[in-house]
Image (cartoon, rainbow over all chains, first blue to last red; front, side, top):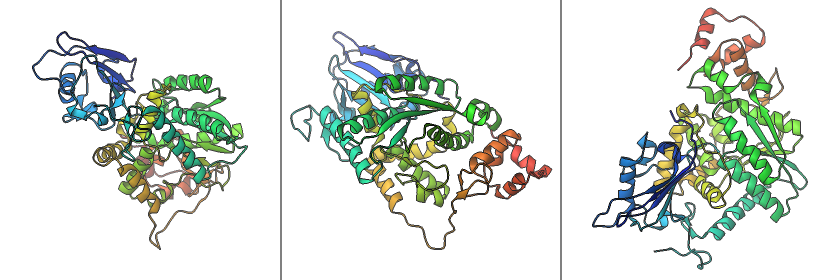
Length: 115
Length: 343
C-alpha cells in the first residue's frame, strides 16, 4: 500500500576523492526514500568511474527504504520513472552507461500517479 | 557529450521526444508541446469563440499543465474563451484534501475562478464512506461514475458551454487496452473520441485537448516550467484494474515509444462488425441523466449504497433494475448476492 508522500529531499553525493553527484527525487518518487526529496550523496572511491547502472544499484542497496520494485525493474528504473542528469533526459546521455562526474545533479521523477 | 537540439541546433537538448525521437532544447520543447496542443484543438474544432469552458482541475500534473497551456494558448491565439477551474472533492482523506490545496494555489497562480463540488453535497456519500461499505476492490467504479456526473452538475451550476479534462495519450491508450481486455465493445468504440457528443439532456460536451500529449512530456513540461502540482497515487488505487493496463503499456513504451500513439490510432480506426448489438442512448427514468439502461449507473450505485446492497452496481444485474424501479422487494437470494463484499 503506497503511503502518502511528504516533502522533497535533496541529496548531494560528496566525496573527496570520491564522487559527488547530487540526487533528487520529484513527482512522488520521494515517497520511497522516507519522504526526503534532496540527497547529497557520497560515493566511495573506486578505480573505474561510476556509471548510472552502478549508482542505481547503490541507491537500491543504500537508500531505498521500502518497496524497491516501485523504483527499479531489473537493472534499470521502473518504466514510468524519468531520470534527468543535469536537467537533461538521461536518454540523451547514454542512460545506464553514462559515467558520473563529480557534482552531477540527478533527478528522478515519477509519472505514475493521477493527473 | 551534450546533444544539440535538432530544431534550433544552437542550444543543448534537454529531452528526447518519445513521439518523434527528436532531441529538443527547453524552448523548442515548450514551443512544440504547446503548438501541438493548439493544432489538436483547432483541427478537432474543440471550442468556439466566446464560449465559457470549465477546466476539470484536480491539482495533479495533467490538469495543472492543461490549465497553464489553455491560458497560454487562449491569449496567444485569441481563442476568446472564458476559462474557469472546476474541481471535484470525492472525500478521500490524505489525498483529495491535499490536492485541493494545490488547486486553490492554481487559482491564484493562473488567476482563474474556481468552483469545488463535493460527493458529500451531491450524493450524501464520501469515497471514504463508500470504501467502508464496498471494500477495496470495486470502489473505482463508484468514484469514476460519480465524478463524471459531479463534473456535469458543477458545470451546469456554472452555466458553462464545455468542459475540458487533462486526459493524456497514456490514459487514452490504457483505456483502449482495458476495453479490449474486458470485451467492452461499446466503450471501445467511444473511448478514443476527443469530444463527447453534444446532444442529450443535461449533457455538457467534454473534450480532451491533451489527448495526443505523452505523459512523459507533460511531466517534463511541468518540471521545466516549475509548475505547482500535487503528486501522489490515490490511496485506493492499488487494486484498480487500470494498473495492469498501465504496467503493460509502460513496458511497451520502453521498447517502442510510439506504441502509445499507435494504440490510440488502432482504437480510433476500429470498426464494429455488422450485427453486433450496441447499447442505445436514452435517459434515466429516475434522474433524467444520459443512460443506456432504464436506470443510469449513478442511480443504481446510489440505490445500492443506500439500501446496504453494495454490489448492486457491480456486475450484471440488469434484470433487477426493473424491480428496484417498481419498488418491489428483492428475494433473499437476490439480496445475498448483492451484499457480498470483496476486501
